[in-house]
Image (cartoon, rainbow, N blue to C red; front, side):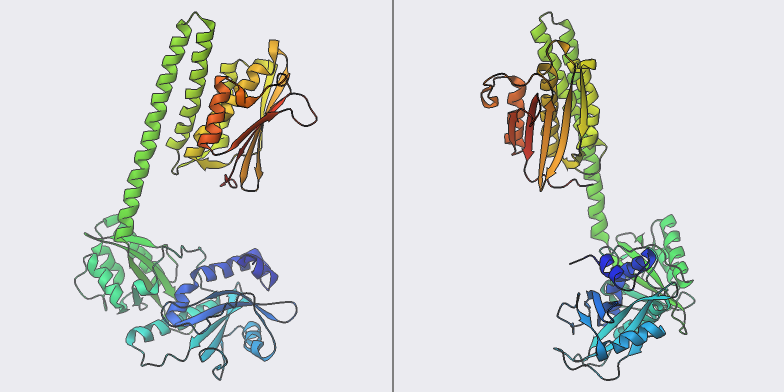
Length: 493
């Protein structure tokens, strides 16, 4: 199935702004479905004259009358006549007789979706008529607000220009307050009253100036002023961002929407949600995240101290082999320190491997004394990997680069070393190839007793669950080492 943007482009939405407007409507239309107790579907005209359904949502406040998946369905003929009328005349159209053909009788209203004076699509609102009961004050208020929002959709003033976070935004069932043109509450749902009670409001909400009431309930004066200004802005016809109100013992998320339907009394809709537990968990996660980053920072500092001590010890060694062994240890410790330095500056437990290698390669050149004899070049992208995989991978790659610089070019012969990262499906393939003298006759990496190769083999097979192979590159001289890491996936970025 193609994306919503692709489906809209195939229909009547021809400009990026029209596509974005329809996408914002779909991102925010659960609110409209819940308020109207109706199933919503979005339809666009095709060049063939048929109408194509590109999106669908069902209400959380009432039984659905469209249990089937309509996305991708096409209609034409008499069924599509209300679509054509709403699209051409730019006004809502209500079908006269109920539709009895489905699993439940339903009545359909078709609303044009306008943007900058152009009808981008039409919105079909199907109401389940099988649910017969005397509507309560809450339901009547919901339907009244839904009617205003539908008129705003047809006028092009809803949805807001900024895409909303549908997961975190308050929903109809969380708590709803309707305001008149003066900003006073004319209705508050039971859940909204409970939310205001939890932040410390003891008096009546209905009849009160909600902006002032919310400001006084906020324990943070600055935040309270901001929320009050947002509610006042919604009454004036603007779309403020959702904001938190922190009371003495609870936190409430507030979202205010203007109700500016043509020909109707102006006002605003305020949705509230008790997010006390969510914000407490967020603060705990932030504290934990800061602690982890501080640990990585201290580990990096300790590793740098160890590297400095090993470097001092190496300078005192008179035996060349012992000095070389200590210098190799300095390089390995420094590589791990770079990984922890990256983690200390990240808010996620992932590592940008390309950034780490760009820092490690200059150190490798200094320690291995590659100098002008061999140039090192990196191609391809490793992307971001979890820290548990990034550390052994960086260490394995630096070992292979060091081995290539040390053994491929005897007597300082000129040459090149290439580090290549490739994606083979879900696998990450890393190649370290040089144009040096190649492997000795009968060399078997599995039987090699070299410390560097043993380290690489252990890291790749045990830590990364991958495979290691060595041989001559196809059609050229030198050596190529191939690391295959299964399941590394595509780069996160």
